[in-house]
Image 1 (spheres, rainbow over the protein chains, first blue to last red):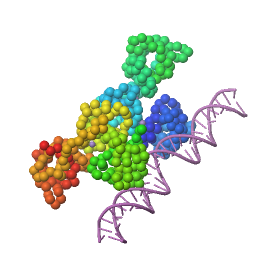
Image 2: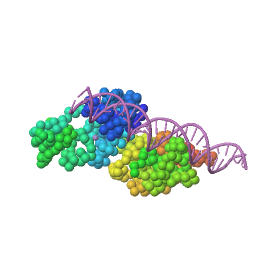
Image 3: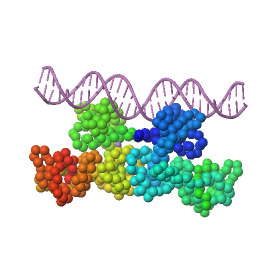
Image 4: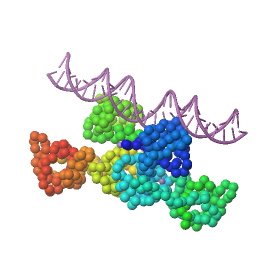
Length: 219
Length: 219
DNA sequence: GTATTGAATTAGACAAAACTAATTACTTAT
DNA sequence: ATAAGTAATTAGTTTTGTCTAATTCAATAC
Ligand SMILES: [Mn+2]
Ligand SMILES: [Mn+2]
Ligand SMILES: [Mn+2]
Ligand SMILES: [Mn+2]
């Protein structure tokens, strides 16, 4: 059965939340989608009806196998399109999210496969996030948050957890991108802010909100 | 103001009908979109309200300048995406229409321009239809229908008027594509069917429905 | 000129996806 | 244990875009 634009967005959101929270609450979904909780509960009941999720107040929303398949398919398309926009159309990485948000809903049997081949079967999207395989396997990479590093540790930027335009613009301004080397020079106890060196340039101070959203590959 | 998916489809349809009929009747729109006339009249009133068209029973629907701009923008995107799908993703020309039908509604300031550049600023889509410029200028080419040719006249296929899958499949089967040379060997008086030679191969008989939908460039 | 047909229009209904406002159910903090 | 605050839920609306069925209008056909 064909899924609507909106159903697909809900499934995707539930998937994402489930990766960082132990319970996918109604409130969390409402926050991410910027929808009213009353709207959200209606949709959850609809998705439950279609057996794409289970839901109850205490357990929260949980994707069924079918539901997860749909979610991963949307995420796959989203990330492939992001690669296309950056690699082929020369968009900046902070500009592509809202376009991929639309493109991920284009329906066609062959499209994802053909696009994937055209792009050379990329493993990561422009934000460093892994692209699920067509069979729905999501590769996992053991990355560490910058905020978890201790003084004098170092790593290479593998991905970012926040893909909002303001955050990505801030990173650009810091001259920080995927692959940048980061060394922790100092970490302040009182607010967890860090002094870091990016690719050997002058040390800069960054907040814990920033360091929480950078994922590093540790050598 | 942002236009909805549906509004865009109506404007595009009105544009297309206006190119082949002197009056864009409610009935004609309903037929093309396969919508009920009652639905169509509602939408026409809405488009009139927004000053994208004028409409009354006798005149039919007529695009305003703003309405035509929107229509041409959608058509431009539709045809650019078709080029992308055929040239870059290796789709067959008969497979791309329903995907472009979705892609044409992706909204982004820079997208059409970037896509156009990436594709090398093509002048025609895979069906031979001209791609409107970004300023909304639609290039016009003086093509003649195959059905208008007389015996012994010849021409090169410039575009097709029907882009339905059955028609395009039929053309493929005939080994007929854009650029194919067609010579008229015979024309039957009673049903206007023709005997033609395609690129020098064995003569074939085709119906008037077929010859009405092939546009030729005459040498 | 009246009958028949087809086109345009009206009225009322419906599904999808959102909303507001009010209510109920849980969790904390005092 | 009670009050306060947060989360979940209900009830009732709204907007968008569609539909069916009934009606009116207009163009032939005889
Ligand atoms: Mn989306
Ligand atoms: Mn991404
Ligand atoms: Mn369309
Ligand atoms: Mn086309």
